[in-house]
Length: 529
Image (cartoon, rainbow, N blue to C red):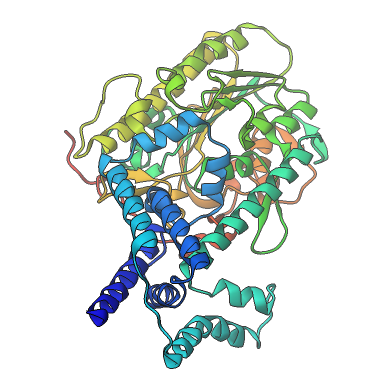
């Protein structure tokens, strides 16, 4: 009887090991599973470790929905946790199938029962203990030995710790490291916003009265007809754009990391890290250049928790938010991007001698896609979420048309640029789209110009990085900065194709774009319905 109970407890420990790795979002590996199993059979019988393991498994059960979508703890997850209000948290959980909650409740109940009631094995086999220790040390030791002949920016201890494939250690270490990066960067940003632009301006020669930057949300270019998508969801851009640029690579795959780099100067401290110099942003540059500056946002501004983008928006001489004191959630239902248009009309009706920069930050194609639609679904694809996504892009195209119609109404020349902050990757057997830094398509975004002084259309196919994009935007506005960069030294169409482009991953480190996986659009050749 005793041996059967002992065998049963070993089976339970092994099953717990397999489940834990999955719940925390790590890839299933033999060493992760075995190390978890060994720690349970060696240590769980002691009260301190029983409590530690019990609490950790309950935390893993609650973390599982986040891991399912976004993987182990990373800067993107920590940023979302601290820069999201209660309404958006509710919205995130409202996207989850009901069985997620049932499974979580069941797991929590089972874990509590196991760690309170189950007798864990008493293992004293020295050979087994030695094997477990060797397994724990193998990867770290191997990484240290391999790094000895080469130069590295990391200490041997750091290299070894990074190779420990023990889920409990990996999870809590990732939480700490991601939190440290987030709060360090946030503190640096808070210090930056006390300053004004520090990039010297050589000359200011705007060729238009009105410059409008439209920042879209979560749009990958291969879902736009202007870039070859089979559904005609960008009729205005396809026919009226003056430049359709195919090749802009966003700096990051989530808004809070990508937008600051797209519209602010990027400071590279080494070949692995980069930070946005928030005071050197397109709005502060325009202010110093003598422009009137405006920020119109349907993304919202949190009350007590100021997210990164509103810190940049605060540089504008005038700002307008459709949502006061919130980002997105139940209170924002029914507040669509078109609410920005009356404010745009009001601004343009005020005749002003200075040139204007107006930034319009859209909700666009933010998940949940169907909730973004002001009107009915316009394109029927195989899945509702994809149908809504494609239709949301059509509504953004309509908004761009309305923006230009308002500009034309006042007979003032203009130049409008539209780009998205980041793309998305397919999920759930191509039935949905989610943030995912591991795919090139999460960084491949539209980049389109509309100009009152040009009637022809050019299509440019050159890959360019979203880092230092603020130089390109400054040049477009006729502002010459004292910087040496292709974006400043060349006219738009003469900017050379770039190679070895890097992007930000979810560890806040630079990663080669070319090494990312590809996520083809399965609907690109689907027949129209």
